[in-house]
Image 1 (cartoon, helix red, strand yellow):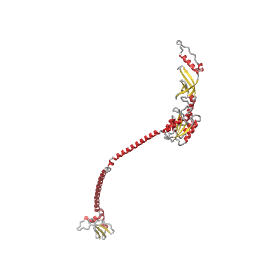
Image 2: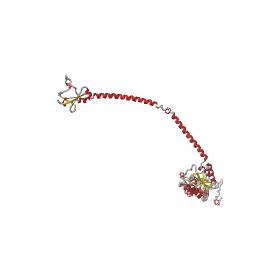
Image 3: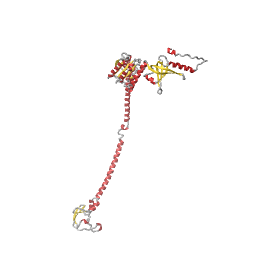
Image 4: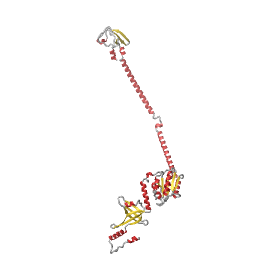
Length: 439
């Protein structure tokens, strides 16, 4: 027991089965002893951090770094945020004030100050840098570049003679013997490591023949991997036009480079497998693709042949003239019907024409003249239709069916021919009016 705690050692209360102490005396004594302890600075590991959205306090779980002892404590969000970014697992120094509640018989701890130390301080600083770069969008998945299917030349940044270099080279050449490597040896830890890493990344990115860049290193402590979380290196990788693969440490190692790289490999060996395709697998896939393509072509040809056979088996192609026979018969029937219709129309039109000719002939002046009528005109060629149109002694001309008669009027007898009967029938003449009426 420490001297400070020995001075706070309580005096045992006198008690016996016959003279027991009341429970309130015990809880009061415990509270007095706890209050005398006051606030104490402790070193512990932060193993749990529980923020509740609707609560004004944060719950912490602290564990002794050597013994299996842990306590729960409460802290205000303002106090916690003032300590900077804290991650679970960080080593911290915290000031705890124990308090004992008599009514519940419960011992609690309140933390009014906390700060990371050692690796915890380092992790807090890395977390702060990570948040800054993330806010700038450098970790956005939309910025990630796709790896080439078959890189012509692979850039490798690693330590000279390291196991990481050997793993990448051996696995890459085992998978694809013809792969070309452009290697840059740099320091992978220490103060000058970040500067050399930045120069190597920029140099390989400037070479057009380099299709992908691999940054590889074996495992190590947080301090050893610090160069791969350097802000300058992160910004240089983010500005690369060439895809960058991060292969730092083991699966549990997580430098900031893993977040900004286009692809994060768990180990250098995994990086070689991601960057370089396996020639055996690719040949197998090529054979599969060729087989599928051959099957697809054969299937297409087979379907086309089946379709062609189906078309050829149709009646119109088996006997092309078969479909024409009904058309020939239909055409002959139509020709016969059209011939009958034309002949009937011609006969009907001929009959009508004969009737028309007969009517025309019946109405012709010549036909009238042939029936014994005559047309009488004066010397001026005007038809004489009345006895009033001429006088005795006038010269007249009579047109008959077979000639003309020229004479002079000796007598005019008014009245119509039907009103008198004469023994001697005079020559019948047809006036122009009668002829016109018959016409």
